[in-house]
Image (cartoon, rainbow, N blue to C red; front, side, top):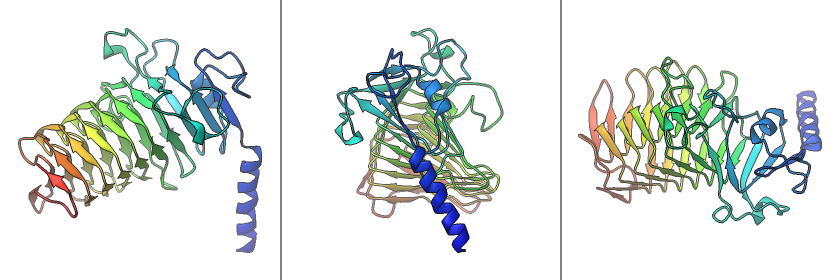
Length: 330
């Protein structure tokens, strides 16, 4: 046991010892060793980043590719933290002003007036862990309208696609980010793929604005099917103007698995489900879907049934009028 503990501590020490901060500016031409030598290709920087590295990105708009290959996205490696919102002269993340230094990751790689040729997804996390972080970005204009199979990255998660792992829980931190104007068949802004594994990202202080799905989960689709677990948490997040068939803002699917997110102090406003669950839809047939919803507000959401939250299972269908300590639902 001592040997295992010592080995783990040495591994962590080595990661920290060789960890690097890499600097990125729009139109930068350097190697990323400092703000004055900032790199310009964020996608290339991420592909070469190592566990423990931090990538600091200055204000501006960044695209995952310079050509029109819709399958290319920003891919964040295991254990890498990515921070936006810099002016380009800071020496710590605490000095950032995210509102003043808007840092946009955009899928609008083709015709600027037609979203049909936008990136399928803007950002992809594969085998992420608790050391991964995405902080201070606007993620916009992803268009996962592909015709692949259910759960495929080209049809799910227009803004962000998170893939779980069989071996460990994928738990990246997504903080102070805005997801807007993204589209997908499932999970317009974010697809949490826990299928046959586990994926439980932590979202805090994020905004989900005007995302849509032509199937389910206008902003978020949490997929715990096939013995998987998709149990993210959302704290102090806002969901506004998102649309989908089932779950205008969030769809939780626990079929033959588990999808039970924790939703704390969030606001759901003007979201719309064309069928059920104006804000949240829960599907737990042959699985478990038991979200914890505390101190949230549900205002002016729309649906044929369940304007706030709707739960469907083989045992019952339920329109939720109040959920735990919900502050307001109408």
